[in-house]
Amino acid sequence: MWYLVSIVVLLLAMILELELLVYAMYSLLGVLLLSRFLAREWIENVSAKRECSRLTAQIGDDVAVIVDVKNEGSLPVPWLLLEDALPKSALLQRPPRIKVNKRRMAITQLKSRGQMTMLYQVTFLMRGYYQLGPLLVESGDLFGLHRRYRTLTSPHFVLVFPKVLPLEGYDFSSRRPIGEIRLTHRLFEDPTRISGVRPFQNGDPLNRIHWRATARTGDLYCKTYDASSVAGATFILDFHRDSYSPRSEPSCSELAVTAVASLANVVYQMGQQIGLVTNGRDAADRIREEGISHEFVSRDTAQANTGMRDVSTRLRPFEVETRRGADQLTRILETLARVEMTDGLTFPTLLTEAAARLTRDATVVAVLPYVSAETAIALGNLRRGGYAVSAIVVMYKDHPEYSDCLGRLVAEGLDVRSIQDELSLSAVCAAQVLR
Image (tube, rainbow, N blue to C red; front, top):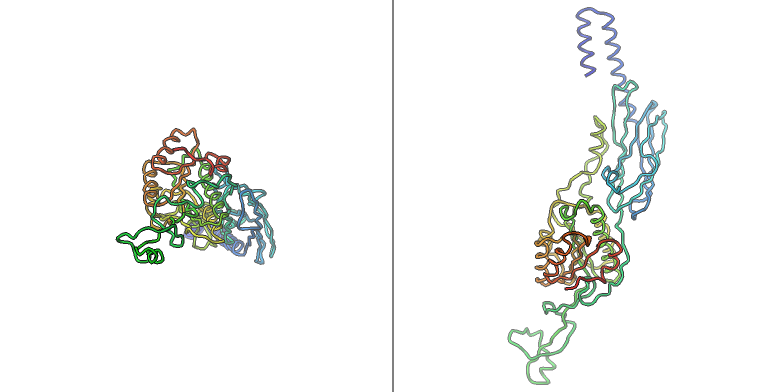
């Protein structure tokens, strides 16, 4: 705009032969061009490097961030505004998910080949997947005619694991939601565990015939086997946004994640298989894959294009396959650290999508904040399909629908438990809703 106005005035002055005005416009254009050149030269010669003390943390841990900024040009930079980007939603949420100690913003100047260091700490108050950086740099000419905005350094991503609480009384009877459960039907039999013999019946396969008993008695006898046992657990976490009341957030959703993490830890310590299925989204899906070292025309545009994306279009379950393994608990904790609420798959739809991939030799443990009639029927159908199913409801007892939610699950013949806080979570394995 300044260039256009100056050129128009210059042309008019030349036509009208106003020599002083022509001289003034030449001078103004010279200042504008020089200012533009210097502003670009200053910011293009600035480089930065960030270091983080760790990239994984527990709730309550501090992570130290060191940002070194250097002027690699031969011209001094008269002023720089530095801001190391942090997720705004995590800072503004009440209660906040992170807390910043010391300053992550600074106004400075750099002499030729000079450098400065910015140091601050981030305290992580809740589990999650947090982006630290990039560094947003702003500079410009001394007259304020030209501003330049640039992002430097690649961002760091810190994974904060969920809280894992010790549980009491998890050595259940046959209805416990974790551990081995002897099946009450003969859908699965263990061919390595012979329980006895019985007379041959039409349709019995030849590999069931007990040849020694047949030879001794002269009549055909078949082997009978013990029923298989269900060992371990597959946790199904409902993380649909509509299932959680805004009045109870974020405490309710964080308690649900803590419940799954704590129960998975117990099953892992028992040496059994564990898995996880949820309809939540993966925070890593929101990472911007394009580069971040760009120049922007305004500060708001730079901030909007350097953070993680606000939305994710994920419509498939977020899963960790049920199995044993030394790293299985770590994989589940990493998944729980990254999981975020979604408005995609509902819980009944999640069960329909994931049912074919659920292993039948592990208990299905559903952790959910609300139980609709459709959810209860879906879990009941899963039980009638041959799965051992338990449900843990994360809901306050004074909730107006507390009794109805638990009653729907009991009516489907499910093992039902409820938790309201971390204290009740510690004893969840010992507290069963009576049928």
